[in-house]
Length: 309
View 1 (cartoon, rainbow, N blue to C red):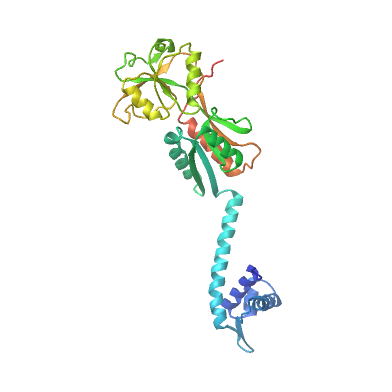
View 2: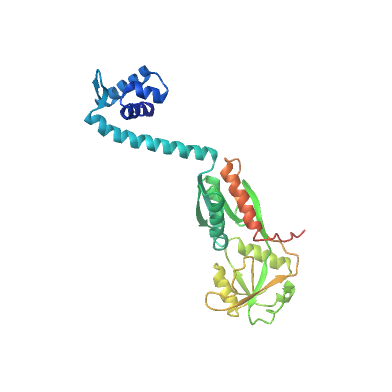
């Protein structure tokens, strides 16, 4: 166990640099006895002889003193750095955010959200992980994540704090050469007999099944996949239409096919993107700033869709 203090080390360095107790006391703005007692105590607890005492010439460092001074200098510099970092943490200008994001949202938003927040809060490190809906909810609940960006369905989140970031209106996706590809909008009833390519990701499947049911149709399922890009490729290949809420910037699919998106004329419920945090957990300045930034980030990229009655 360390028995000497940073104060004693600081007094020792001052004496070594100033060449005497009286000089160090003046620089430190304390009494000479206080400096002398600190040096005596430091030598006592370390077992070192730090200074040679000269009646007329004051103090000079011994070999032990010179070597120990190197260690003390590094220790005090590190202590000052710790103090600066602690002050930044207390002022919440620095820190770390453990962010989780749902798998299908991450390719569209993770990099942009993290990068843009770094521009406004350069002292804050955002460590981002991708998980399923249920994993995200549990990680926030148990405290291994500070906050998560996910959908408001597919997991139990009644005990968590949810802030809406965006309301994504679904769209119909068809192949480029589909007979309906030229339409700007469509009534779901026109797709009642069309083969359907199901996006079978957790949470997404039930949401789209409910939308089809609310539209009064039950199209035959021709293909399904848990990968959004695999679904788009299947649609481009002519296996059927699909419903999606995320729209990649390019109509091209991974295998070189091409799709078209069509707005839905029916009144449909949007899929909400939410920022999830632990209810009653610590919400300091950093977390509030991130929440505000996330809201502004999504607002700039998505306009909320109408909510059906």
